Length: 440
Image (cartoon, rainbow, N blue to C red):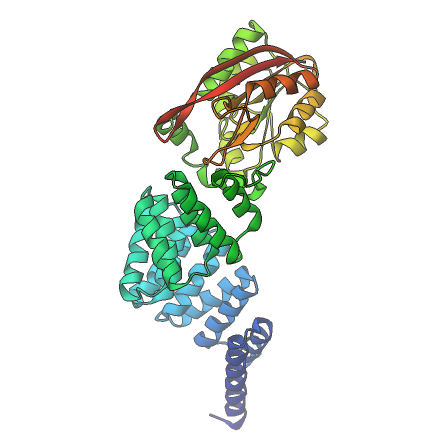
């Protein structure tokens, strides 16, 4: 090795070590500069490329990180850490199947490499391969039973598999190791809430608040289980978006087959009877979801537009080819701003995710042409005393008949029909809904 080459090597080594020190100190940008300078002197160093890709991921630079990590494993395919980081880069770029394959390669090299097991479980859950994810987390916990984050993910996976009792035990293990996990408290509270254990659920939600949990979401959940807690006017928008985006793939099958939901069919039957064979030129399907109601509306309409807050639900609706236009927005904002006008507005299983409905009725009155119809379903609150609006432990709102009739009068509607009929199952009991058809 000549003097110049030796000097370049020593300089590259010093830059590499400086980059490692800066990365350990949390200065990813400075570390990136050091690793890039080191590679300019010694470009074929797999370890430097791995470290560069790692800090670039920390900086949110997934595409350059993947390039560095691809070069690294091409030079030396025996690095489990490089394969693991490459899996994370692929995941950030939306390539979940490739991410899983890269993480599995890391584990083929070292079956006890805990970061790869953890991220493999996470990516398998993202891919809705929950049984395989559970296996990854259980392999991890067999090696390191003291990992609070792994117990939390184990609980999430069990919940996704429909095993809430076991999930609750996993959350308890996670919180016993580290109580400062607000999402674990929230998830634990959700299981207790759904089991009808309201006081215990409230205690769990209060722990979530104490440990920095999302205050808006936690207070919404508290209002559903704790008498006297003020109920917000609507769920947090992020909650509704996340709920339905997560639900999109199995929405139709679960809602119709498991929960025996017939609300869309009942509502359209009520609409047919009230409209007496009328065909509608321009229909708006509020909270259209995957298009269940749109399919029922198709024989009655020349053109149907849909609006929903959840992008994945809209993607499923688009596949049905029944909508002229689909918009991602919350229904209240859309009704207040759209320039479109309609002769029929439909809201099937939408009002259950809103508390006070003044803005909805005002918005529908705004977009509905004279003589147009408004058809909706709303869970029945009349069995819960005199309250006009009730936030139930299901995190869904119910409304009274008197409230719906009053809003109709105040916004210039005539009630053509308002019938109480079966809606869907909830915890083995059949819920009832008001099915309304109003004319403008």
